[in-house]
Image 1 (cartoon, one colour):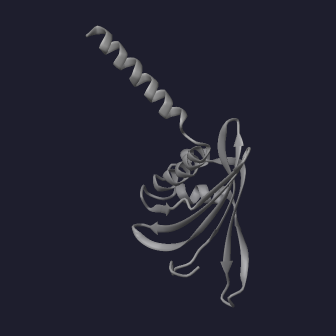
Image 2 (cartoon, one colour; image 1 turned 90 degrees about the horizontal axis):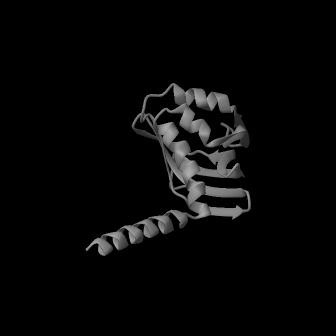
Image 3 (cartoon, rainbow, N blue to C red; image 1 turned 90 degrees about the vertical axis):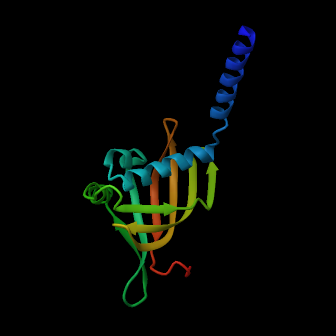
Length: 154
């Protein structure tokens, strides 16, 4: 009986180790992005900032009233302040990981999303992330997105 218990413990430990080691590079990229959205949803600026490099670029592909496309740049500190000013649950972005590409220390993620603000649908679009592997941790360096009200359009 004692041998069986020891064998069970050893097998359990080996299984847990194997499962921990099976996390793919794609999974570790997803962890960083999910951490960013968790920080947004929980109004946790420390968690939010931990997903980014020290000097990230945030941009949106926008359309003006004349239907002309332009690039709108946002300051990271303003984004962090906006999130910090929210109540828990007010900034809720729900994404789908559609495509992840990785080459060494560079990763690209294409992620359609829907954004809910204060419990109501606000807009949808696609996030395009560029991440860099720094000190064994993926960090978002560049985020550009599209925004629209009609989620059936592309």
